[in-house]
Image (cartoon, rainbow, N blue to C red; front, side, top):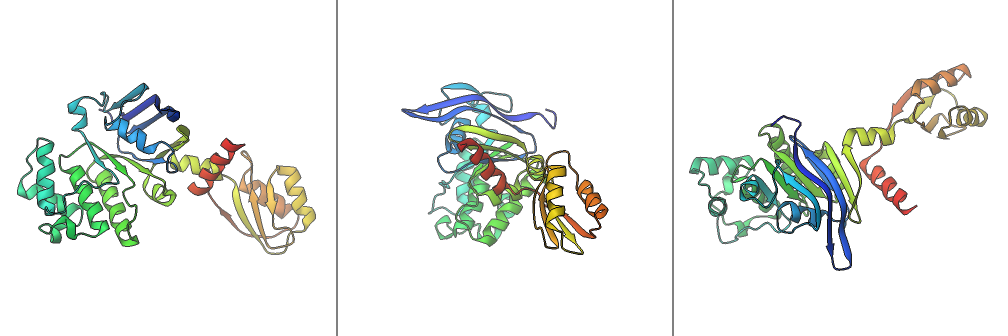
Length: 310
């Protein structure tokens, strides 16, 4: 399979529960090597999508495939690892015993060395023989991640992997996820409503709201497009309100900061930073610095929801 080939595909997927249309034509693609962020508020449709991908639910209509095959095939499901909010761990079993038990369910028999290496990869070597019931929330999440990896799947589906974990635990799990992609070649679908988590970890996203995909694509491109031309210009002298008004009229920008030495501008597509700087200098305004600010994921998210409500 080529490096850019689709690993997860959903096309026009619909699912209704009584009067509730949980998914309404959901379409997106996860490519090999992605950490794909599936973003949305609680109740937006993320969990329903995941259950369909794991063949725990069937879509009413549409097409769903993982690694090019339908999800109802046993051989397809064996290539998927998953971590849900309920970690599925047995408190009376040690970490090693939990992994051995789940390995049997997947029909595999990892060696003692492989189990040891897997626990080391999630930073649990020193607690390998302790019962899961004695673990902290962060340790349980890491053990659940090891459980999802015990059969060496090609695809991982992670639902809120750092939810409820302290900052140190969050950092550890983020590092593990990055290692899984960059060192072990896994493809990850990461579902979350945590915008910071998505922005830190993911290269591509889909934003679902009320069962519909509002935007999908490369995260950097989406943030760059949303924030292109958001510029702060530091000047050596205060900018006269008349010059600021001229900037607004000439370039069609949103501008604030007249009468001060800091201009906050939002430039429309096609207007460059250099155009505004050249204009200012032509009016005798000294420019001391230019800083471009890209849209945050939070700003993008808010703008999309605002557009939907309009």
